[in-house]
Image (cartoon, rainbow, N blue to C red):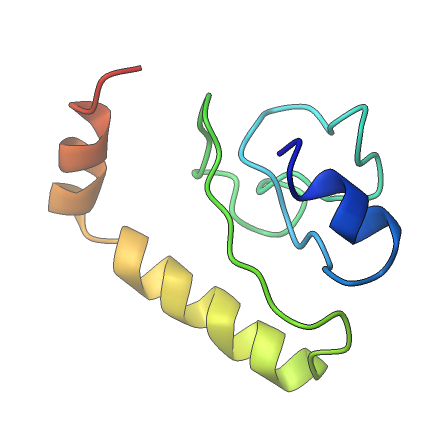
Length: 85
């Protein structure tokens, strides 16, 4: 997150959500996945997707739907549970 934080703060990137249970001190406006509508998604590390700061809301909504579809199957949950912490 350290590499993305300055870009988010200056508006080149927009943080859509973070994987932790609590909001980031460095990016307090970034929602948690639970706040973004995905309470079942949580992690200790974090992944990111980056795009222009002014991505249309319908594109972001489609992206969220696709991520939800990808992570929904039980076998995906099981595989990610087995990854090292």
